[in-house]
Length: 277
Image (cartoon, rainbow, N blue to C red):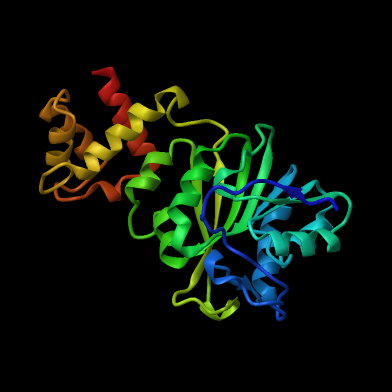
């Protein structure tokens, strides 16, 4: 058997997928398994992966709803599956060129060489999974199925969240489409959202400044004030208020605008302005 056995020391529960229209055996409750059964969504995910290059690592291979179609791309493929029984069954059905690893993705060491991530992430652990992905090296593109509201927030629809702003200098987030709850078995209480994350070829902020930049963004988002100028003054007292007012006027930012209204480029410019000071 080609399945690689990794010891599990956690009860983290990656998302699952199965054959469209044929979810196979019910998911294990303790693993929070929900299976993708909509062929159009499978086709959309495979289509997005087709536009990328390099080896593929699938998060939560389940019964192979994505694994088996992804094999058609003729690229090195590794499926990560926490459920040992499903991993063993899927291993028997995949090609010799596909590797099925029984492991918890939150504890799995991804390679440093370029690769592509794809997966149906568990709705209840989306934030933890995304943080794990964003901190992981190597990957160039990620095609992810997550909770709809999370996909919207990560893509900055209706305003960027603090997490998005903290990672924008190095990654681009794009919302692809909404995925109805009926596309899963068992059916979740909310819809899903298909999104992509791409590593920028040229970072907006030096990666060596990541911790300081992210701390700066957090301080701005959590600062007191009735609008961005006041919040910036509170979060970065080293910046003269006159300089802040000139910057906000230059970018036509309203006095009562909030941090969520800033773009990735504006966040990077603000950070550089603070560094220059």
